[in-house]
Length: 435
Image 1 (cartoon, rainbow, N blue to C red):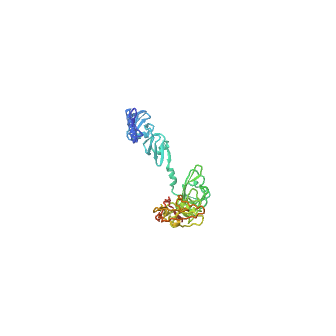
Image 2 (cartoon, rainbow, N blue to C red; image 1 turned 90 degrees about the horizontal axis):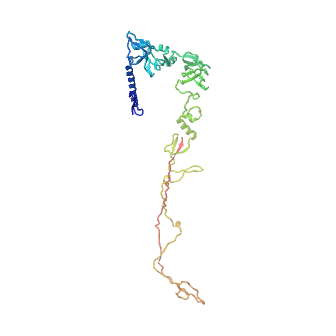
Image 3 (tube, helix red, strand yellow; image 1 turned 180 degrees about the horizontal axis):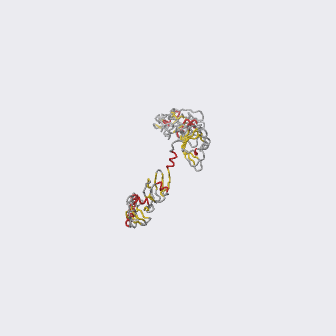
């Protein structure tokens, strides 16, 4: 929720509520207007000609809308002049009522600047050291009213000369001693030093195959016609390379310090170069070639063979078998056929395959058997034969009759199966051969 200041009810934005920046902008404009009106209420007025001003008086410049406070008692000119012109001629008479230095853009004459204001003049970036009304930038600069932070004109001048200089390559090629910032290096002599002149920028263009070892840690760089090199020296006269460009745009050789050359796939597969960098594609091909010889077979859990491999379609729907001897293949039933079964094959038992067993007997009609004793008596309830006493002879008789017994048949002479579930889980693989 927006709150308000205690005395003038200036809105204080709620920074947790959007859009608070709109409220802040409105509040600052209200404060600016309130201060402006308060100063006029206290005696501020439009600046006038032929008027006595005293220290502390406040006047408004109707051209720039800025308020100024009088710093020295004086009388303004009777002849009509602009307030801006008068302040330019008398910079100590008035001070701008501004509290915050700011970027003022392109420097302009007859303009009030306060200490800390930032301006741009002819590619020079400067900050005001004192509050003043501007006259001529170079004049104000000479009077200490501005401090130049960056001067692009001096840097530009060094690279915009009419012609290149020229120096022959030598063990010490003293480029810093040459006046031009752009130099042509001729000859093929090996350069081990560019001299020791401090704080210089040099752009070098080579016309011959000079060999440069300086700046490169002792590793030679053989230049080509048209190669360009930009160097700078520090306060100690030590040269450092900013950039290096080949005339044909191709990278430098792999032996040069700080330059990376990419190996081709063929170079990676050859495996003899120790300096070139490997691209992801080169690494892939190199890895496959170095670790898997052509003709190597491997299993892959994917539908298509990887790059550099060919899918082998000779074997399909087969299981794997580990052997210690020569490898081969065999069998007659497909993997998916065997492991899709849920029962054994139907089979009818032969007599030879039947186990030993008994059959039940049932009687078709009632009957009896009679066993006689020695004396022909039938009174032998125990059914026991006894031997005759006193040498008597036994008289055996048997009574026979049709028994009427039947052996029962069982079974239908059909085949039978046994339930079984061998639908084992599996993962499909392919065989691929290295190209």
